[in-house]
Image (cartoon, rainbow, N blue to C red):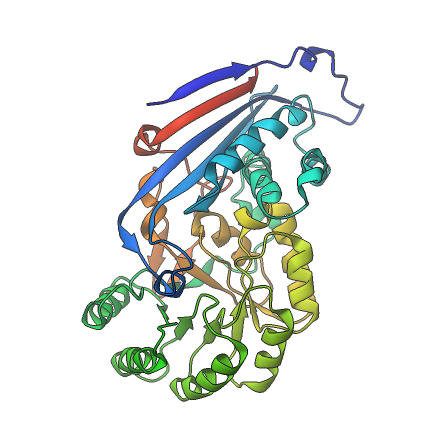
Amino acid sequence: MIESNVYIDPKIAALQPGEATTDSIAWIKLSYTVLPLGAPISDAKVLTGRQKPLTEIAFIFAEIRTREGHEGIGFGYSKRAGGPGMYAHAQEIAPTLLGEDPNDIAKLYNKLLWAGASMGRSGLTTQAIAPFDIALWDLKAKRASLPLAKLLGAHRDSVQCYNTSGGYLSTPLEKVLENVQTSRGNGIGGIKIKVGQPDTSIDFKRVQAVREQLGEGFPLMVDANQQWDRVTAQRFCRKLEQFDLTWIEEPLDSADVEGHAALAASLDTAIATGEMLTSFNEHAQLITANACDFIQPDAPRVGGITPFLQIMNLASFKGLKLAPHFAMEIHLHLAAAYPEEPWLEHFEWLEPMFNERLELREGRMWVPNRPGLGFSLSEQALAWTQHSVEFGKRP
């Protein structure tokens, strides 16, 4: 059931844009939508009691329309907790965009950031900004009649793509091996499985079995989800080096920059991390400390595309590889615009939310030729929407 209400700022008509302004934001709609997962998902954090199994994902969608009729859509998300808080904060800051020129995305990002600065400039504050920022970039690319990747300046028309969802710790090994075969048959270019069992010998056997099934040379990654302490990570990562892994992901707590740097310096296998960080500044600390080989920013988590592009520029300057976390519908465009060959994470979870599908073939995901991000909300997404609110007046 959708609960909807409309807020109209009485000052909107009085706003006077500058001489260079060609358009202004007239209407914003926020929606709170909950995506149920087909089965509970468990990783190392669940086995150790840190978190409960993942059963649903909360989304905040922002739809923006301008006086001239241009529109864009963006989203943020939260797993397990925090969705209602993000939605509440997004409602607080949304009216500050009314009457503003949608072209001035960096300015508007800063305006939204300072609107909630007393709550900090990372975490929930930045994640609540992401739907607006992403919608503005979508709008800008649509107005130019270009896919976002082309607006940014693409280095490639497709991105090598790996799959995670078939290798969770809650999945028996026999099923993991079956999923590996299915993924390869569907055109996936790399396989990632979860590790982080309390008994590392179980992890070792699972990685060994998957490597044997894939054969030599096929890209294989593992993800520990911040499970290990420094000593365990050092010892076990050395044992894993024999499997020629593309990377070892989040071996330590995401905030342990020093530990990740020491690990990255001591291993031949690449270290990947960054998905849990929620601002450019946090990523900058990780990058400048040489604490990883693959940086894994998440645009909805860091506040949108604007800070993501800052992270990309710094990572490229430092010679890092890029492997964005989750939300392939957004990250495909951003990864296509990265100078070095990146990886894209494939998650089919979000497909029911959108009318369009992305093309996967020959191990790569292909940038669609649709303007903007190239997606629109499905009827199913509307059915899963629990609350919505509008600001301004739709032209």
